[in-house]
Image (tube, rainbow, N blue to C red; front, side, top):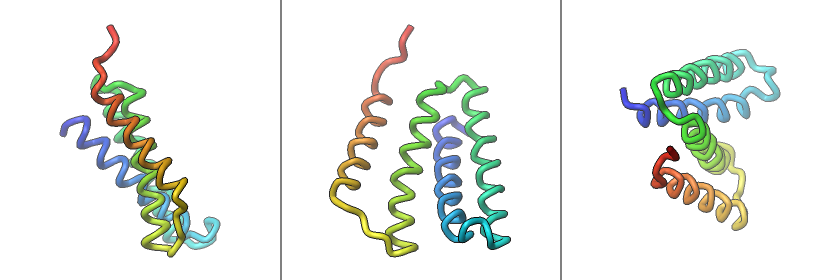
Length: 109
């Protein structure tokens, strides 16, 4: 699998972690708590694979963090009915734009 595919999978699993963390009610419910543990472990494994195969550390971490940030906002909104402010939405958009710009930049020598 390509590094970007692994990062996409890692980000998706990490968004799952956010969902399970909210659903676990402070880690007091067994199955959502196990979901948190499993998704964190698999996410870290995938990010480690990307870095060990020559992927840039900063690019990998930033891409996953921004994807999780945006995904968490969407999970909160759609799954738990939390509302997003205009400032939060603007912050998400700026973060996504930053990752896109950083992805276009050539690697430093």
